[in-house]
Length: 181
Image (tube, rainbow, N blue to C red):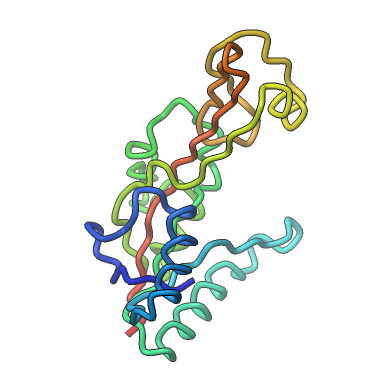
């Protein structure tokens, strides 16, 4: 996805993934000159984890961005282990370091190891809204009253409002910026 942000933290959208998609379309429609591209997702099959494929994919993406003359590859990163700590704010979680000084989260650590720089939280990166019945169906969990629900795999609690019949999940991601050239 192309962007008019140059990877400067002050120009990256707070809405992350959702905003990247909208910004890319708006950039093309306006005929604006993009200055960066955004990664949206890299998925590696579980039996292929640990083979360096994620780092290689980031490198390929950065090369494509550079080949197009753009300055940066930005990525609203979905931390792979944050779901184990859904009550910890992303700002804190993303700053955690291991004893060796490397970032705690494996996916953030991979980005940093290949030259990415963390620039801050996209607090509303992806928003999923559904009825209470949809959320119960999607999660397999009964949600009998209004409140916050911890859902396996979710980075933050799902907020359920039974009176309005709405469930809302607002996922934070963490911006990583890679200079392409």
